Length: 259
Image 1 (cartoon, helix red, strand yellow):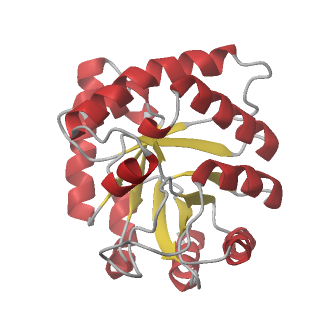
Image 2: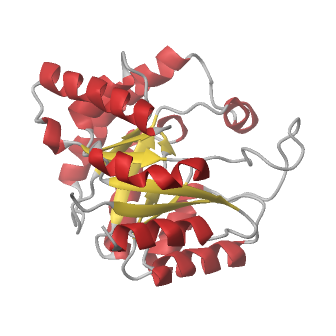
């Protein structure tokens, strides 16, 4: 069975930055392979569900700090919202963080979905179709800018695209991504991965050129072998602040080490 990376997504909410930084250091210390945050402006859960209040920090400035604060673990956003930044600028930001980190950045991106972010920060929310169309248009611009930057990225700078939409999102993944991130139980993962394979065939991309990442709930920790057997290259555990309990991460790392 192939090697599988263990990734940790620290939800940058309901915590002081010092707590987030300690959790990032712990994730690296215990042997996690990848460290993600997310790209939102407000907590997604916890606190008052009507106002969605609570401590929260911005994605890319945090990634720049993680690039200096860590040494070996890969870092990235799971995932950047394409709507919030000019694609040329976003490419330059990603290159810069990659260089600062010594080539450890995974460039995660998606179309965006959290309406409160858009409304409160003055972005047009529009429609899901419109946001996907914008992502589709941004991807070649991002790739073109990355190729022009001086100095270039140090690492491979793999592009990760998150989402499971079968008609559009997985087609964009097949065209542009090096890693696809999905979520759900093993059955859902198998189905979506099969749809991605079909899109790879349609756009002329080798299926094996797109790695598969999956976020899973704690209740599926006993089914990690099934994810691996289905082709997952990475399993991701999301942790909420302020405690960022690494227990499930340690279980996944022990599983990985005993494979």
